[in-house]
Length: 240
Image (tube, rainbow, N blue to C red):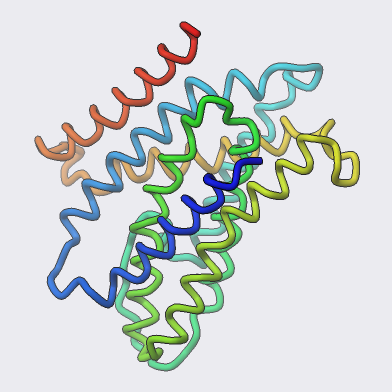
């Protein structure tokens, strides 16, 4: 387990949430471009790295079932998170009401997203997850601010969210190394669930915001850039 990954995950998410106190104008278009980049990058890394890795081993034939379960789990979580993990910011009518469903589902989502980092030898995944959590954390902080929570409470909630991905990485590292309850035999199955979540998140990000199923020039550049960096990293890692 590498300390710098823990710090990067935390700083990216925490910084994304704190940005709500400094951004005075509507940055929704910029957030959409960041999301498009991270969605394309996560999708590419999932296809190029995570899926082939998960299918290795004796349980490979059943991994597809866990991928489907992860996909549907994310569908279920979004019934409570309202798409905050996609950077969605919704207006809430009730003030001073803590969004328990959003907070719980978002934290579980972040925890699961941190797990594949235990099997990321070429550091291809860490940057995509970190970038992906910036707009998600910003959306969470925005919702809390709309509900009239004070700055200290917003910072605490953002910090809790920011620590979940590092915690997922910490736990999965222990599992992968065989130091937690002997669960290392089921590591690929757990990765199958996470792959399903990544496939849902990344494809939703890529297609849901495209009016009339058309992608504008800026978004296309962001998508191609995300995929291009992922492919370059894949080719480089397989030459060494």
